[in-house]
Image 1 (cartoon, rainbow, N blue to C red):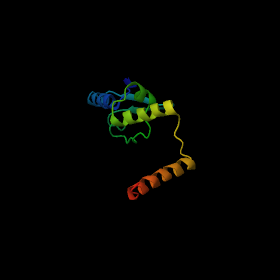
Image 2 (cartoon, rainbow, N blue to C red; image 1 turned 120 degrees about the horizontal axis):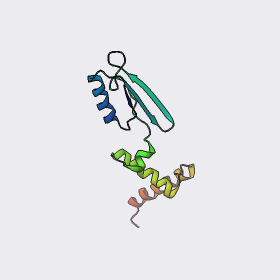
Image 3 (cartoon, rainbow, N blue to C red; image 1 turned 135 degrees about the vertical axis):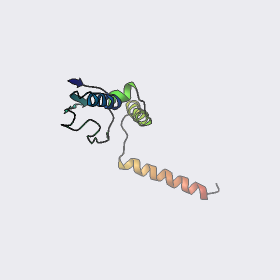
Image 4 (tube, rainbow, N blue to C red; image 1 turned 45 degrees about the horizontal axis):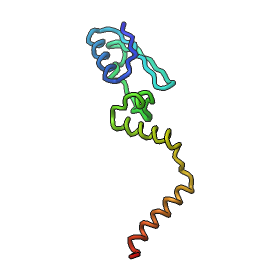
Length: 115
């Protein structure tokens, strides 16, 4: 029996193939934040790791983003986290929307105004 708690999909898929080829039961475990999960994968008795439908993550683990952002999406998320740490959360109040509208009107009028 192989017990797995790997931290990336490529390694999990590789271990899954090795266990299936060797007809060795695999206990797969993982976590994301405070949510944990486990499953038992046995050849010809249960779905393999690649056969199970997985939803695309809507959020990214903060530990991955802080320690090693490796994809463009991770880098964007890291920049957003850093921005909020430096400047505070974004204010999407109605006053902000009015201010943006006023600036747009100023720029639109400036094209027509020769002064």
